[in-house]
Length: 117
Length: 115
Image 1 (spheres, chains in turn blue, brown):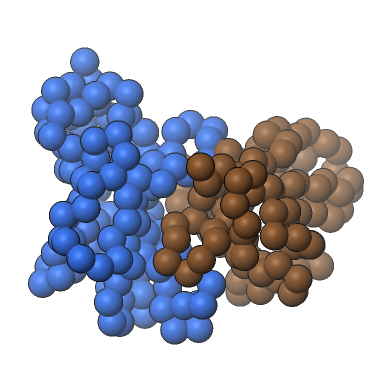
Image 2 (cartoon, helix red, strand yellow):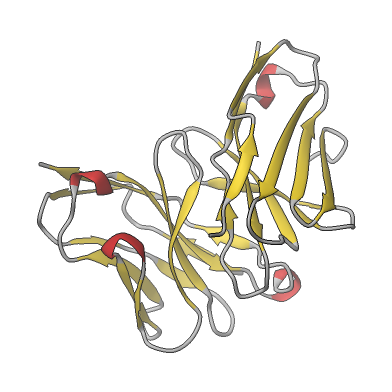
């Protein structure tokens, strides 16, 4: 079965410090991985994706993620956090098998990032 | 680019009424649209997947007669919550995508409150 895990409910960092939001996955075959961010009472905004190619993927707003096949991880990172980065972050993997022709996503449970001034 | 507009953003109505939520892709053609429900501080729960011109595929446990989905064009999908009751109160979010390898782009959600 395909699944995504975000082991931390909340991550707290100080502004200016690097941040990491963790994500691990379990899929058959090669994964298609995504990160989204959600601000209060809003939909999700796409940050970045990994499909193939370089393991380090750069995305919007200075975020990047590193695909690690041996550890089945896709952690989200940013070198210097901003207070405005405070939000809810979701990791997702595209479902395979019967859903592969529609691109259905399987989401992690979400991690709240709190950046303090 | 890749903007998805969802309307209305908030609706409050009495129990027993039906509510329609629209999801539009403004600058791309959406071959597939998705409808999600999100409870407070929880992840998104996929309700159904719809492809333009065909019937929606509902996830297990989602009542298709309760949540009617129409995807009549490549830029518009609607979700109608029929005979809504307080337990249907939730945050509903749509998303749309064009080709297989493209990411889903999300609307801003609809806060539905049934009194």
